[in-house]
Image (cartoon, rainbow, N blue to C red; front, top):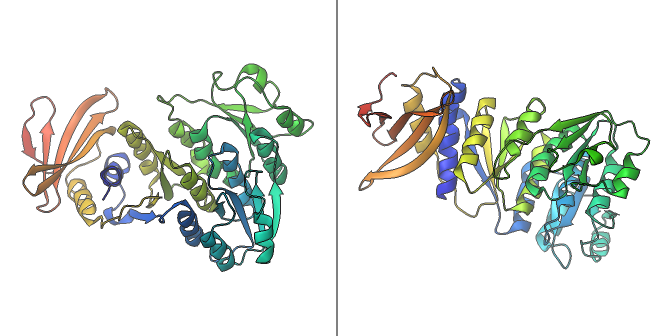
Length: 391
């Protein structure tokens, strides 16, 4: 198994112990959802969420365009999957998926999707509507025209790909169009779109470095979402801001750089108001993620777009049971590190470092062997190793 995925899975399970203290080991399910490439993956995702659908949304699978993520709101309006086109047209596997789902109408997003697609769809008795603007700003507006503003709008910086990826399924559930903005200007298309409309709330994602006051002054009923995270990872701020509107029972876990997997999975996540959680290269982001999502009693993690074989997670579940039977949640702990280490030849332990959130000092380092069911704690100040027995 990919070590990063293994670490994520076990951190999630351990966090259940220390953050919630009430979840049974067998309640967390982990499932991989992927194909041999992006086109097969989007079909696998569609199979997971839909047995049939009158509608589908098609975007260019050869380009990374932030305005394509705005289409998640449109997909949710019609309870439709998002499928990818190739540079030359519809991939044969995507065409088979459209037929299997018995799709009757397709929304094509943008001019970058091949002009041959309409005729391909016509040949399989599917009607098409192309939603197309002259640039990404107008594309977001054209999609917004299909949604309306009765529930509000979400304004996001056009360059903030990860923010848009996190927001897409949330906006879709709320049926709020996502409008792309520049940091110091609102496009004429966006200004024209909002002119004269009674928008009940305009969520602004970011501080003044992302949106100047001059830009925001053009909107009424503004509510800013502060982004305090470091290193460009804002998803925790966004998920916290909308936590009462998100269903955390089921999450979709995607590598941050796999834009097209984020796009495909966002439509599936939106079906039940679930979040897309991005994995970043730096491990502290993963700890932030699980500290939030596990406090919401996550039942299932869908790992999207991996080519690895996902192995049985029974050993991780055993480790959870071992620790939970011996540790009481008597403090507010976070996870500072997690490692899967070989302490002797063929003998592996999970090393889990916890810190006290109140004073940010390391509290305990646990060692757990799932084969022997032995568990130890290493005291931070003395490095003394003692059996973990009814702490």
